[in-house]
Image (tube, rainbow, N blue to C red):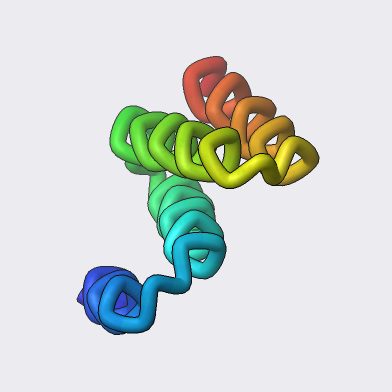
Length: 72
């Protein structure tokens, strides 16, 4: 719920980078709670957002996190 509220607020002010970071952190939260498949989807979504924004290092981190989530 808190992640969704944050994303909605960032959308209102067009803070796309923060949206991507929030989605990535949501994936981390899901991963710690054992929801690996959902976390993997969030990491993929974050990777796409980071790539669109030209944030290559962050996109790479999201891709690595996605691979780790799928391996669990």
